Length: 90
Image (cartoon, rainbow, N blue to C red; front, side, top):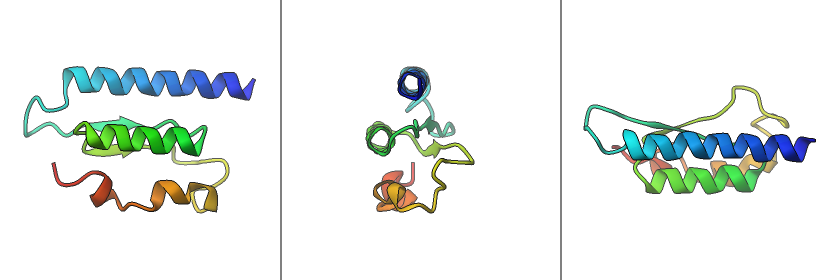
């Protein structure tokens, strides 16, 4: 069940990010777009952070509460780059 929820959640995030990329990213200097990051797995979160940062997104949306909590070492790979490195001034 959890696996299926994670796959669906990741697919929803990917669909949202793809739509934002097609419709809004790079259309105006005045529009800054935030990517929706799937947090069901660290690998999925890291992959989308890198993909979205490389494609011009300016920020990332993550849930306020994570399991385990955001200060858990499992999330270290996502925090090894500062937000300014992942999303340089755009």
